[in-house]
Figure 1: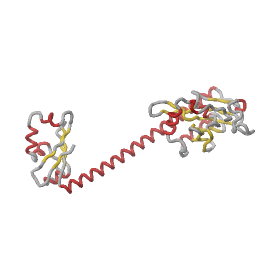
Figure 2: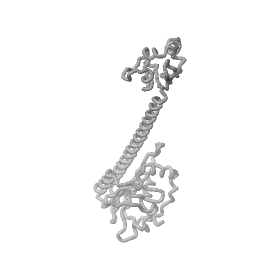
Figure 3: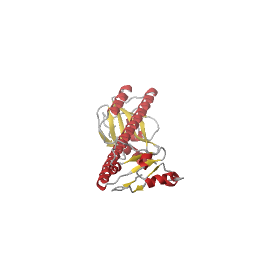
Figure 4: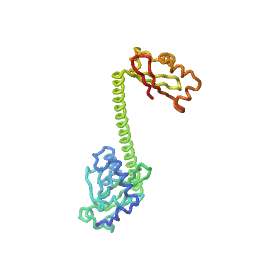
Amino acid sequence: MSSALPPADMFADETRRLAALHALALLDSEPERDFDALVALAAEMLNCPTAMLTLVDSDRLWIKASNTGARGEIARDVGMCAHTIRGSGPMVIDDMTLDPRFESNPMVVPDNGLRFYAGAPIHAIDDTGERHAIGALCIIDTAPRSLSDAGRRALQHLATLAETTIAARAAAHQAITIATIADRQAAALARQDRIFRQAERMAAFGSWRVNFANDDIEWSDGVYHIYGLPMSERPTMATAMDFYPRMRARRSAPGWRARSRPGHRSISRSISPPRRANCAGSA
């Protein structure tokens, strides 16, 4: 390994770091305008011909965005950004031919190879709230150069913007996932409701629900059908109990609410109406 990169497992939390990276679904994703704009800004602000946002996977560095349009991946043990993520701040190398870690690197050895590198680590938060270095925002040049203190600060600020962009992207994807699940659940409930209503019609039974908090009562379509009532007439508790004399008597007994379901605000009961079909309460 020409870049003398320490083993990946020198990260005590390498497994969790990779899990945080993979959870973002950024690897091998399509180009995205926000990241393309960020690397273009980095190249312009720091006056460097090439700027990239890379993601450090288990055995590769994947280029998420580059101002030159470069895409693809390079081996992790060759890429400079694999070193960058091991630090807490920017890593700057004025001339890589003079750095023992990179002097034999295949991207440095050629006469027109890389010479200057500056990169700042990019972090992401996993589902436990732990922060992991997942990649780097870097600038490179084929000529030796230096980076001022102001340039280092700018690079760090741009890396922070990259982190914010990644977090916003993750939040948006999570919101879409939640909305999709909610839509599927709503559709499933709607299907169940249609099946239940069809069963009511076929079996000539109905269901009702009563809320103790306000004596609000709800009848299913089947109950209206059983008693031949128009569905536009929503029953009150008093009018509903007229159809259930035994239930009305029990409701008038002391402590009926408390005996029904302690701690619950609604109740359901199985009732045999005085007609040709049964009306079963449901919770």
